[in-house]
Amino acid sequence: MTKHGAIKKGLIKKGVIQKGILKLSLLASIIALAGCDINSDDNDEQAKESPVSGAVVQTVAPDYSSSQVVLIDTETFELTEGLYVKDKSDYTINTYQSEIYHIGRLSIDTIEKYDAADIEQPIYSYSTQQAGEEVSGNPYKIVFLNDSKAFIVRYGSDKVLIVNPQATSAADFITGEIDISAYITDDSIETSPHASDAIIAGGKLFVVMQRMLSWEPQTSYLAVFDTETGEELETNADSSDSVKGIPLAGFNPKSDSLYVYDNSLYVTTESGFSSVDLSESKIEKVNLADYTLTEVLNAADIDGNTTDKITEAVIVNNQTGYFYAGSGWPTVSALYQFNPTTGDIINTNVASGLADDEGISDIALDDRNQLWISVNSTNNPGIKVYSTADHSLVENPISTTMNPGKIGFIRK
Image (cartoon, rainbow, N blue to C red):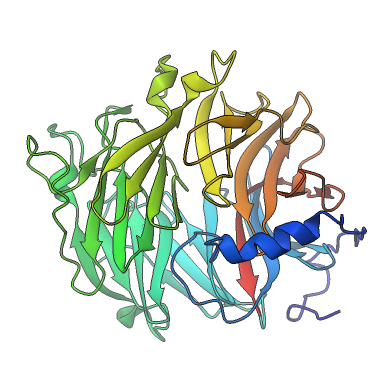
């Protein structure tokens, strides 16, 4: 078994190798992969030069006092804990090919780069603040056009950073910016449109913004930019407003709210924090050819639902997708299967093994069409991996010391 770089003695705690026989039905999901559009943890357009070799997962202490990243071998499901240990909790990860980007968010404002070849050794650590910026930009995500050009959306800033991920010095890291200040709400208190996610599709950069006003989301927008020039593109979505982007019907898109499959961009919105209108929490679909927006479903479509809001969705193909909904951990979350074309909810109890004190914090598809789920729990935090062919567990639950969150996949 190949080791992922040198492991410092005493720093990293090895997990138990959890081996099991893969279900025969998994073969069907592997064969079905040809119809999928799965590229990486963040679903951007990226070349797939080699298969996924590992999953990296950001984990956080129950009291939010510290955090670390764990590595899971996707063949053996061996768990390695103790990577990127921090005495703060507001961290996330994104991946690109064999590279791991560890992002420090509010008031941390850093990005550290690692590689699967030596997963413990940082290649660099750069600030995501520009010269003169005093307020935390709060970086949420980095998305990649290619090896040498990427974009960082920052929740607390009205500028999207253009960066060179291969920069060998901090001075060469930030190469430009994209101004999104036109989307700030008409209130002098707000200094940011609160960009929460971004994705690249069809050679264009899509940035979604919550547009908060005193913590109440206003009309959320999806803006589109040329990835070569940084120029915003006119979508002609609404002739009555003064901006070029697409106004969404749902409110409050969170992290990982964007997902691309085929010629459509799916947008998930959770609705306002204090809102009781479940219909404001939606999955919407943007046609990438003409920017038309249609609703796929909303949280009020879930039979018997009175409190749960949709948080994140992934798409397997035109007939199969998954989303999870909840009213906030430790309330148990539910995982649903739906049809992205018709909006029909097909299965209301996919992850039937969740207990009363367990909540989902992230879902991700790997290149075998296996559905990875981060489960937060008071007693049993960890990762569950399901086959999308029959919803059986591919492997026994993989226990983690801390509560898992964002999942990313790396390639050797």
